[in-house]
Amino acid sequence: MMEIRTPKTGKAKRVLEKRAPKLVETGKKTLILHGTKTSATISTVLMELYRLKKGGAIKYSRRNENIRPFESGGETSLEFFSLKTDCSIFVYGSHSKKRPDNLLLGRMYDHRVYDLIEVGIENFKSLLSFSYDKKIAPHEGSKPFICFTGEGFENVQELKQLKEVLTDLFRGEVVDNLNLTGLDRAYICSAISPNKVFLTHCAIKLKKSGTIVPKIELVEVGPSMDLVIRRNRLPNEGLRKEAMKTSKDKPKKKIKNVDQDEVRGKLGKIYVPDQELQKMPLADKSKGVKRERRESKRKNKEEGSASKKKKESE
Amino acid sequence: MDTETDQIYQVDVGNLLAFNPNHRFPSAPSTREELVKECITEGTKLVQAIADSLFNFPSTETSDGPLVQLPPPTTKLPREKHLPRPKPPTKWEEFALKKGIQKRKKDKIVYDEQTDQFKRRHGYDRVNDDNDIPIIEAKATDEPGEDPFAKRLDDKKKRVGKQEKNRLQNLKTAAKAGALPSHVQLAATALPISGTKAQPKKIGKEALGDVAGLAATSTASGGKFDKKLPGEKPPKKQGKHHQYLPVVPKYGVVDEEKEQTNKVLSKIFSKHSHEILNVGKAINMYNDKKEKKKSGRSDKLKPKKNITKKKPANKA
Image 1: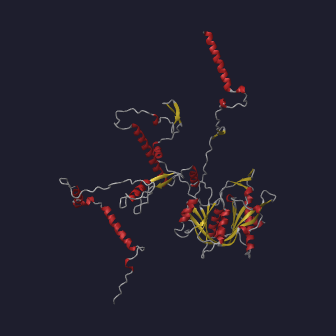
Image 2: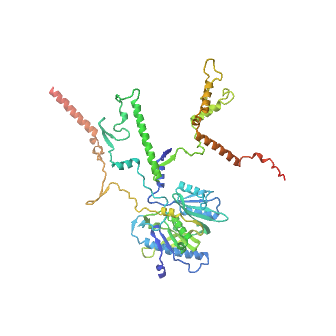
Image 3: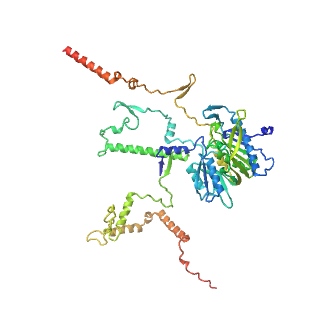
């Protein structure tokens, strides 16, 4: 037997509609969580990543026992969390003797693990260790510039994947219109060796150059770290093909009450409510204008004249 | 400067992304500071490259600053969820297509002849409302003793139930195609999986009362001398629950007990006794028992009986 379940409140319905698959997607949310053991480094890395991603990220603060996505059956709870929070990128931090300061980056497709890449954190420098003019500090949720340098990002398979994951992680929402004054941050990633990437976060200073294009200066505001590639898993080929599908046509939102006419051009229909002149209040509120009195007066007159006539006829 | 301009960057303005695949460190940086500095200068060049194209786009001035229209991103990234799938046609839509029935718009407000008024087509105070008819005229075909009002209500209920059934069927086909509306969930009300334990049901008020009554009457005195709790109700089922037939019948009366037992025996011993036996069920029961025995043997949690017994020494 089956039962139809629908949300009982409008709010719940709206939430579900927000989570439904869309033709044009709005942006991926990030889930930040950690395992049973973390080092001081990895917990600060997670904390600061959360700060950078604020607005588009959810951070779990409890320990999570059975998250081992590289092993079979170790991704179940991750997939459940993804379903629960509607996040499709996850950052999982852990620390062990075999893999110290371990950061696992991964993406989800339809709440299933899509691909995974594991990196170790080295030479970590926290946000707090940088001193700079606080006026240039990047604002929360601003659109970042993302830069990749080094041939490794083109030739080495793992780095290629890392580049894609980092782009997905940092780029935020795809926007149509951009305010140029809101540009205040950049992520710099450079491949220093075939298995090592230097990643840092910079603030942007726009300086006058005499032309329309300002001269750009980067100030490191942190965090900065080295990512050492460890394990990775590429997406399944069939899954990748499916996930890369895009809609050719954007959904057209119908504009109500507007028509296109070949001869007359654009036509709009405007609703004008009925002018109820009877009920319209008059600006002048003097005694003479009050309708009731006038009407009663008239009535009295008519009655008076009618009775007179009657009398006359008699 | 010339060498810099010659370098080709891959720029994706939609994502504000730039990639320099040709960069090589001129000399291996010896210290960390040098490396960071080198990376940041390289990054500055890339950001400048994005900004060059970005600031040259036509912009519109707003009170907050210049707004620029970004081109769509060129870097292909995987989707978050699958593309929305088209909804399969409902049974009615299929039928309508086959028959060429087209959708027509109906007015929301209809003229009602009975009251000489315009009324809503559906809902409260609607046109041709059954509830407005106080008298139903009897017909020759009417069955005596049937309440026409109750029948009308019953028919309505049946129609609504049928529609609900159709709706569920259509939703099921939609779910199969993966095109269930986002706000609808189809949930199984019971899990018909054989071989598993039945889901423990929520105990209702009625059942709890029954259990309480049973407990109250299971003392030696049948609950007669027990202290009542405040608010405790008297047990619902009092008195006999079974009637046993007398073993020794009264004189002149047919022995009912004997007859009953004979009936069962004759059924078993009859020629077609296999027909009254549910063979499938019997086999299942037998297999179940066998399995239980087997699993009981391998159960490690149960203490073994011969744990204290010493093994008999091998006699050579």
